[in-house]
Length: 352
Image (tube, rainbow, N blue to C red):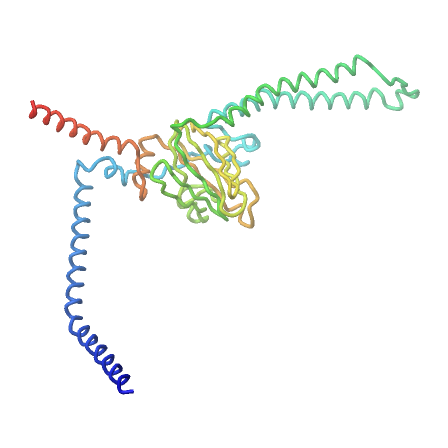
């Protein structure tokens, strides 16, 4: 019993000693923390000042020079967007002008082959029906014909449709093959992900940064001079005139990435990555929408593709947090390689 009292008192004494030492050392710890904090903030200030100085320096490099050189492109009326019936009734009922090679080929096929064939067949069938109604009406033919077979007519209505289908099949198969062409290795990859109800665009070849794109309100669209339900706050910016590897997927339900003026449409399926080649002929702003019924706000999920010259596209990439351009890395590596070569030559001369 006495031994237990001794242990209890010893424990209390150790706790009291530890508490006294902690109280004594607290002012010193606080002073040390304040010193570390002030030193860290001083270092951060110095780093910020150095970064600002480097950015202002003429030797700061292309990244600093282009960081604020991007300005969103103003859309061109009638280019990359639908035409209102009030503006041009005929143009509002046909395809938009095309700004990709596949789109121009498809539009040529429609205008030169499909539309004339459809028109001729429709007029021929209408004329044939009218002729039959007039020629073989009851009053003109009180005794009906008992003819059941006509070999010549049967051969004609079998051979002629086959010829028409063959004529249509050749450009159709060519267009299908063009649309499934594999992107080249040097194509710039951009990944579009559909959400309910907005898009995100990821740039794995330029630092893997991500852009979130939402539809502008009617007031915001009007203020920016764009069409409501087509304008977005952050566009999908791409370079014009170079191959693009467009990848699509979705995070929730099936969406569809569709831009009519580029003849581009590809489903965005959850858990699956689809891929397609796209080359935009010239700079511009091209509007599209999700074309797969994806829920209550399906109609409020537009997308806008802004195609820029390569130099302006690289400037835009540099202005994004984490954006990188491969040419910058090559330019930065060149002086280092030259310096290494010079050091090697100097070492060889000293050794000789």
